[in-house]
Amino acid sequence: MNTPLVPQSVLEHFGIAVAAITGVLAARGKRIDLFGVLVLALVTAYGGGTVRDLLMGDLPPVWLRSSAYLLNATLTALVTFFVVRLRSLPERVLLIADAFALALFTMIGVRKGITLDFTPSVAILLGIITGVAGGILRDVLLGEVPLVFRREINLYATAALGGAALYVGLDAAGTAEAIATTAGVILTLTLRLAGIRWKIGLPLLEAR
View 1 (cartoon, rainbow, N blue to C red):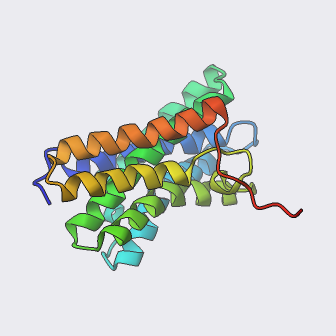
View 2 (cartoon, rainbow, N blue to C red):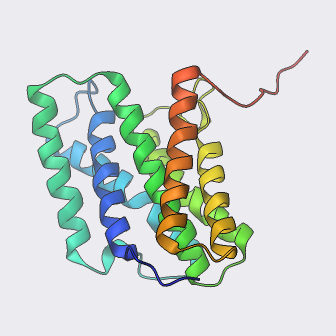
């Protein structure tokens, strides 16, 4: 594993901020008060990392190790809450923000898996879990079918799989860590946004 040019904590902060934004955006139109919105934002921001760290036995979860993570998500959620109250945003904004959160958290998870010497396949799985778990918990709290399980959602976990696999492959080939991370983020984003734009998806298992 190459020495990270971009510290893991920096990626964590970016991912947490973007995920907190998606938590607030998902609450629009649900008649949820400020406290409820903050809960949704924090669950979305920390859910994936918490599940990942519990599975890895890396405790306490990363967001409990520094108050900066809590401050980041809370302030981001508060600012987003009041912005959304003042200005209506298209539904597509949630999908795009969620795509960025997916890409960032996927890279955070797979990088941590590689750093802690998990096998490549397990590191990829950890990346996917980190990417999708927060959104799943958010949607469950809202009483909705999680995005990753909806029929109309295109290339969600598949996009995370592609980005994580690319990162692992580039890392194994000795590619600079910053390049591998950037490539993984770009591929995850490209697959997810292409799926949204052109409604690309995997085949469905349907009864004949």
